[in-house]
Length: 129
Image (cartoon, rainbow, N blue to C red):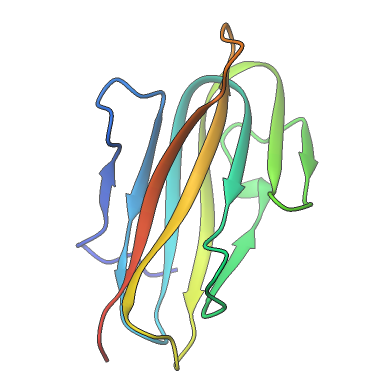
């Protein structure tokens, strides 16, 4: 998968346990979202709901370490039996007729020693063709 140099690794909260990439793509391009999370037992991925021009592909073999369990309902969720620092890669493809704009995706992570999950929002930017 192609990832643009413009993709940045960020989180609104510099102390967050979750970091993600924010690619900038033209219609028809592909990229890989890379999500890093520290000391987690669960990660959920919420896609941009109102937009059908971004297609996601999940391959748990590209997760490090691989999850112990997975649930591909909406929202796809991955579980680790012991707290782990994980890297999740999600391939994205933008359709050729995708409308330019900024589309949000969210990551919810369950920290090992916390009752409340952490949610971080990130964006995929589709540039004008």
